[in-house]
Image (cartoon, rainbow, N blue to C red):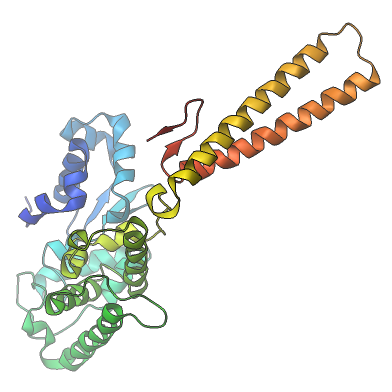
Length: 326
């Protein structure tokens, strides 16, 4: 039976702590049941049998894992499995890595992350034999490819400086403290294939937008090293939605709520008038024109109400007959 490393820090990870119990259990199952490269052949029935999670719930729980996995109809890959098992960077000179490398080659086209790991694979002669090479192992930078690996590290360091201070219209990180530790986490994320330059830039940009929109107090802004270590960039790949507190005054929201109610009321009134008109024994051409006009007005009020409902929904307000906050 294979032995696996486990990180006790996961119990402090924001994503893991926020996950429901069944999601935590399924994640632990996947970490134990995947192969040496982090691939799991999808078997919903086995997962349900071994964890006790209802089979019907597992698909939804896998959806909740989001950026942590890549999957198709047959296989699932834990993107950061090799990193957490301290197997990166891989080396063909390390006997323990050869099976992993062979497995990754089988799935070369499964994900860009697989390709990145293989591209950064080294054949350094000094790699340890029979044991995984931990990240930062000096042996992986020695001999034949030493200069190449140092060049890669220097390139990531230059990237970090731009990410840290902001360039080409991009904002700086909103809380610039403990730069040395943040730099180490940034290089680690890039070197081990956990993130692309674009993902880190987008994540930082949207995190800045979220902070400004919510007027987040300085004390609650994440330290850059923590933000990077916990892979928070995954949470900010999409632009944050506007919030009531940041984007709109209470009067604006109240006005939209009142307009929504008014539109719904007018649409109902039109529908009532149409029903009354249609109760006539005989409809004249004038009656038919009146009904058509009422119906057009009803549709217009319903469409406007729908637009307002969407505006409210983006701000966390459910638009129904009572209009309530989520």
